[in-house]
Amino acid sequence: MKFGVVVFPGSNCDHDMIYVLKKLMDQEVMALWHKEKDLQGCDFIILPGGFSYGDYLRSGAIARFSPIMEQVIAFAQKGGYVLGICNGFQILCEAHLLPGALLHNPNHRFMCHNAFIRCETDNALVTRTLSPGQVLKIPIAHGEGRYYAPEKTLRSLNDQDQVLFRYCDETGNLNPSHNPNNSEEYIAGICNENRNVFGMMPHPERAADPELGNTDGLLVFEGILNAMIKE
Image (cartoon, rainbow, N blue to C red):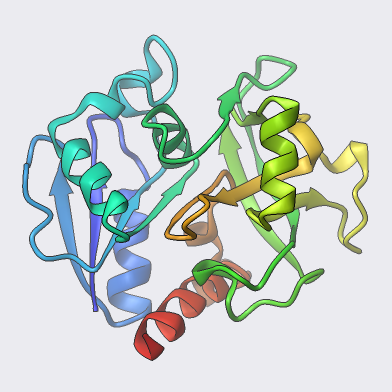
């Protein structure tokens, strides 16, 4: 399987992602510079975290117009798999590949700490090996992570089983004190209606190496590989 990790000016989690996929998962990985116009035959595209274009204007708003995004959008529209993490999630929302938007944290401060998220569905590639209700400890690192969508969109996300993860406490309860950015309905990750585009604010690549003392994030990547192999 061949993964493509898009690199924007300001990306800072691209090497972390490449390390996990290449060294820990033993997969072929291509670093795709944002000015390229060819996805080089990749089977799965990842938009990593960071501060694309310095987060000027609005997080992800400029990166959405990078030349490579034309190819990413076309790839997704044809059913290709795309995962955006943190800034990548913001870019996918700006590109309208995912509904909603990521707004400033209520305190207008950058947050960087471990958070608990609850799996909401196993009917998605990235959650295929998880069980609904399963709790993962995954780091967050963002200044604009508050998921927002109009009530109609939220209702559709729930009705169509598109919510992947919600912030929770360590026992899986939806607790306001464990909703770090006050996201609507505790949402930490979603997918599109066609279930081939995924976005999440927490960083599973930062919880994948045993050296870090936490491998909960590895479950996300194992799910992707297992599902793709079966397909």
